[in-house]
Length: 381
Image: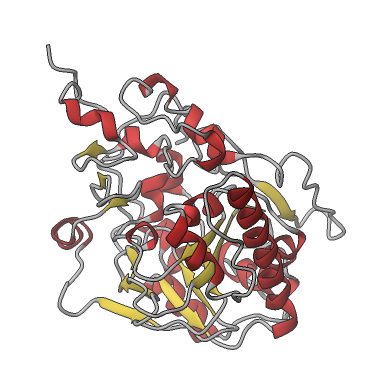
């Protein structure tokens, strides 16, 4: 049942809902037509039974290199913007794709967050997101009617940076409760070979099987991330912490497909290179995106019209980050305000109202005055 929920009127995240059949093998659609790119039977079965699957050697160099070129342009634009504002000492144009942002970050801590929030969807990202072979795989997961979810991300994982190390969570923890009843597969696509040393993903094997969203907390360390304690994973999601934690190395050209109920995290990047990656999401268009009414999904493919043309108008240029910040404007007396909006290194969003706030940092700075115990708790007298 769809619950009316807005970015300013956010319901608490914890419920007693349990919807296993939406996320397990019973949800698998029947696909009879053979199409390019489709995964073999055992991999589709693994996605539904285990909650994830690693797909190697899926993308060609010609499909991924334009994304790297687009990111290089973003980094160059950011460098010039920071340099012209007197915030970095030089442009660091002599450094390559895997080093330049780190050098910029050394001069201006938080540069990776500014880039993460850039919000521009270049043609190369659109082409990858709607890649025919990739959509044929998505069709194996959710059926022939496919929409792009409004939450997509460029991950700017600079070395040994807490702000880029995402703790345990379920993706539904960031969305409203409408997302609890819709399968939203994610493709996590690294732009280099990834392993435990440079910050690949870990998943909790079959942690989606209960169909439940566990209790999360906000915010992790010095970040804006929600976090799922391991004890809660074990208690609520029936995860065996000794046996079920799986490290997922992915070679360049591959991807990790994730069920939106599977607990997962990224490991710290202990290498000397930036671990760039994209995460892209899809769902059926007949369900809410669960994004607090801030932005809807976009129809990519429909069984009603095989010649459907995607209309990106109003989608690719829409700044979700400013909308996220607007969603907590009623809390501006307890949230930090950047001195310069163009170089704001904080991130806020409606998920901060959804879960108890137990850790304070620059993203929630003024909450430490003790006047508010959590987003849902009453204020002290």
